Length: 350
Ligand code: 2P0
Image 1: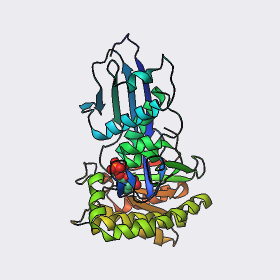
Image 2 (image 1 turned 180 degrees about the vertical axis):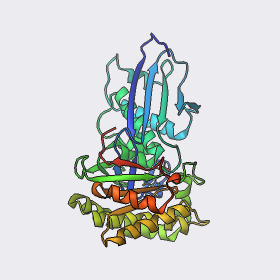
Image 3 (image 1 turned 90 degrees about the vertical axis):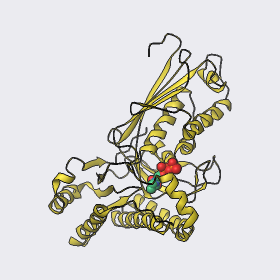
């Protein structure tokens, strides 16, 4: 848009993250405070990522939002939560007269915001598109308005898992009790374990039948197993996997990752009525990974599934070729060859 009336524009990119320890369930649905902590790896920039531009100008008539080329309502409550949290942060600090932030906090009577976001992968297919999208929006707005310090909690009010995409490397979301304490922290940096790779096996890139937000609250309401999981299982697993990451102990890392994935899908099954995210192909992939590991009696690959049928496979770089050749013998190439992607978990900051 042509503009001579003080247009300011910032563009950011942010990668998706893949959780080994799963977030599923909130104790505060408005503030998005989770029932349990979670832990993820942020993928390399440029592979699966969101790209967002934010612009503020006096010549814009109103606030507007475009997602993958289609205009969406800016009144989306999650977007409004992010914008409100952003305004709250701006108000907390002093600014000079030339600061654009002032215009933004004063109801935007003269200044309006345009947000344009695109993903380079399917939206809402269980590939963490909302995580990358909100992380990217918050990163771009923070740059536009010079917000410094802890910003993962702003991304969190957009979409819980987005707080983990605000950092590279291995990232833990501390569940916390309130909006200031429910934040993401980096537990190990980008270059800590450079041999790790992730393969994404896209079984189905259609929109999932039950969204994560509704699915997880149905689980919280109806699953007894969920309460046990949040209190008794997850805290122990977070400690175990952190130690495995620090020690680069792939076997323990892989075992915890696979058990976590299976418990997420067990609590979905324990939801009433039950929720199924995995399909028959997903289950064949699980069987395949266990067979692959049994072949040489060492754990060389680990699967994890989120709220969809697609598999993420963690493995060490030295085993990628062997895994793909063995996988292609078992599964007909036409069904996956365009989708199998080796992604170095080389994590960069959004
Ligand atoms: C995770 N998932 O830890 C888990 C594993 C799905 C399964 O984070 O309601 O889209 O926006 O906070 O962040 C999906 O949850 O849900 C998710 P909201 P979100 O990655």
